[in-house]
Image (tube, rainbow, N blue to C red; front, side):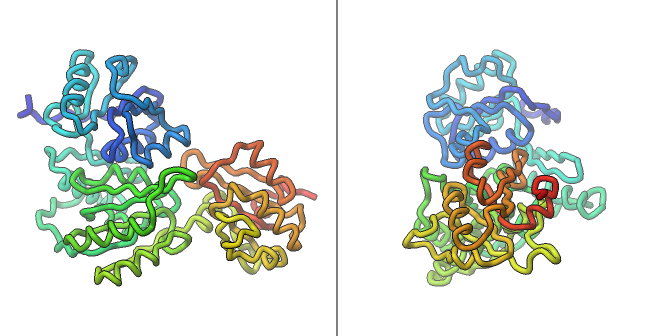
Length: 412
């Protein structure tokens, strides 16, 4: 049967149970794409990567923290077997065959009953390419088709056989605030041509599923109050892989240099003699309010805006933020990483001179399907955060620009 080509079909998995057996890096690539199509995703594995653990914590998937059990297939429509144990994958796919459930195998695609295509989306069209188990060719054809849709041509004239010269080094790619469509063209191109991708938790996760299967994915997720990869270790990884002659992409959410510690990685590369380039990304303190309909500046309302890291509370000995000065200013204040310390930040701004009636917007999960905006004032912010069960990630916007965007909510 392996001599026959696959029969392409578009699966509608919204609300349907999909089982992922295994919690490693291959699962990490596949799960976000399943979430994006609305599947009811269940991961069964004794351990998972920090990025998958983050999806569990946000309630987007269900994790069964144990080995696979036969009953896991009950009610399942689609299965992806991605463990590093061939016997487990064999058992899962054999059961799926008996129960007529389509199963994808990560270790040996010929033994599965379905293959995962290289997927791209543009202008309402989903492009899925299966290149006879040649992942780089599949990804290349997909990218050409998507690019052709983007620039107005119908299809690429032919597949390019020649591969561009592969120059080793490190590229810092800012992925934008989360929506995979907001990465730059240059950033996407660098990501898809990488040999190694070193990715943060907040980098656009769906794009990781588009990577060719032979790309090494290094998970350096930093979970709030959870497992984290130390910056020194990240520096070591990107330098080490580049010195091995590989093209390394350091993939971040937002922009590399806006509280992204990107310049520390630049310094590490330069000290090691590694070539390094930067592809900026849309930074969330500007793009997330913009997508939520809130301008950070507005004529006649504000002549400045200030971006603040709120990971340390006011008064902390290591904090570098002058909240007294911020309280005396009239412009917009945008707080990143500040959900936990938001009540104390609000109090500090009021103590510095801002009226307690100053409008505040908290934009949760900016650019993602779960995005929502919570409105408050500096005086009511603490209680609203509790009432609305606000959790990171969120961008907090303080200032009259919030009232410009939501005049009905802040009428005198």
